Image (cartoon, rainbow, N blue to C red):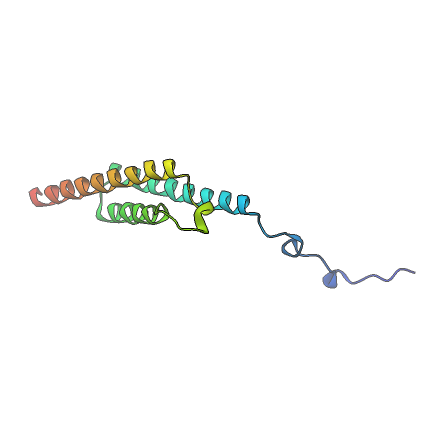
Length: 117
């Protein structure tokens, strides 16, 4: 006769218990994926703000842009592997500046519309 555990007391090995810590290459990949997700969120919120430049939309787009700017700051050792390549980061920093200027323009236009209404 085989000894068995009741179904509610079955033992299982947690997937976390069998995982190995990520290698530096994998960690840098996770960081790059996360930064790219912030870029995508910023672009989406910016597009919404351009289509409908309300105060809330502009504020959200500006907050997302600031978050991206923080992610793109030059990093020090040992965190260099957890950033985008410098050429890509520089390009995205330029894009952040352009987004910031465009949001300022949209805010100015929205203010002008409110004054004339």
